[in-house]
Image (cartoon, rainbow, N blue to C red; front, side):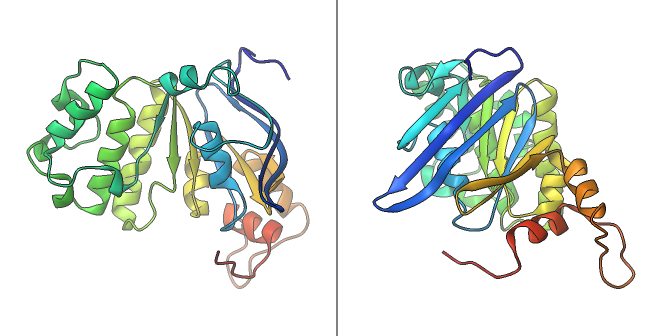
Amino acid sequence: MEPNTQDNIIEVENLVKRYGSFEAVKGISFTVKRGEIFGLLGPNGAGKSTTLEIMETLREKTSGKVHVGGFDLDKQPNKIKEIIGVQLQSSGYYPGLKLVELLELFAGLYNRDIDPMALLAKVNLEDKAKATFKQLSGGQKQRFSIATTLIHDPQIIFLDEPTTGLDPQARRNLWDLIKEIQKKGTTVILTTHYMDEAELLCDRVAIIDQGTIIRMATPDELIDDLLSTGFERPKEMKRANLEDVFIYLTGHSLRDF
């Protein structure tokens, strides 16, 4: 697998992550195309967040090759950091600072001059410029956290379960924002437990279970493949969706880790 492939902005080959004798990621390989929304889907403990953190340079891999934006993770991690945006969790912000102050703080870390109001406008938070982070609703906090990933105009942003805990309206608002970010040429890598979200947003998805990619394709291709087996939803609903594919491939039992 060669880096700098024109259409691929991320290339992962035989990625392994072990914690002692436990192998969380078992030699997975995949590519992400420039400008697409790519989803990593899997049950709790499947290895998707570990894979995400390795690509983000936040966690060391055990073995394998990773290229992000043409840069080798082993040799050029700082170059990778310059071209990616990573969504922080709520605990990553100073709760008492105003949103404008937080953006200026992060811009200083990137050594960037920004227009905080213009950045807030991108995520529909201009009217909250003087509010503190702790005063925001759940959906507003998520939109603001995405705004912080855009400060340095990254080529790629990573979103780990961005709509968890949000009400349906806030979820759809965030979906629109993610689509707008993609339209401007940014590649988006996301994890989610909401299969309707993945079906709507993702150009392609990789379904990971027990540290292994068990299927990778577009949502439509996965759904059509399931339907070709003769699968039908119970009762009056006949057409399958991506959630049916997910349950079919990974099983029905609840796994809490």
